[in-house]
Image (tube, rainbow, N blue to C red; front, side, top):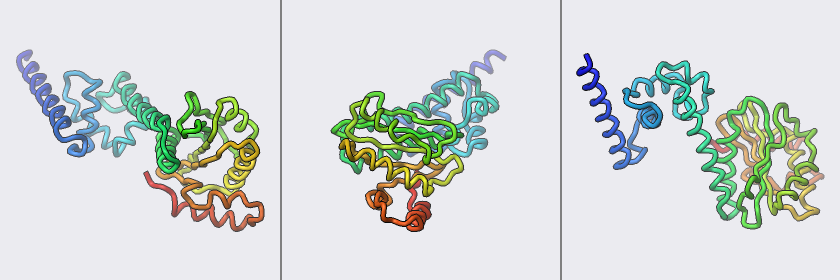
Length: 261
């Protein structure tokens, strides 16, 4: 019995070694989805064959993203996933967010920063169950200021009632030269409401007198993001002469122009 168990474990170690060598040789693109999950599980579950666990996770949560964004308690319902493995998978998701944050801390031009902002906020707040509003502060080189991401509100975010002064005060306190904001739509679709459009204009108006550069407002849905700047209408949204109906029309167009991850 012990000999048979030892052989099984030895075979499992051989499989793990082959999987690691395949990754080092060919990279992640050579792997099926379940094999990527298997590689992740190998880091936190020793000795046993984790392929069946990886396949069960894919079956339950559809893909790697679904697995990494699943609540710990849901992960632990899968046979073979204990608290340690569930915590490790949650950590991997948080590491992705930190990675995108680190990208924002590197100087770059405005266009690449918008790309990075979208990735950052999507990884951070797309799966929030309640609405949140966040602010990011940048220095003169468009690098994120240390501790420059601030969650302004959490719960029921009504942009019509947001205190614009709070945003400006935080930006000044952080020593920001530029700012960007983002909020999520837990319902799924990222197209902005008329109040979102009005709120964006008010933030811009508050920034202009103090020469604070307002570079972006991103609305994050479950599977897509809307960028006010990428929509091509960012500056014109601040024109008071625009009628409400025209603004609503632009908000409806947002769904077609939302950026898919």
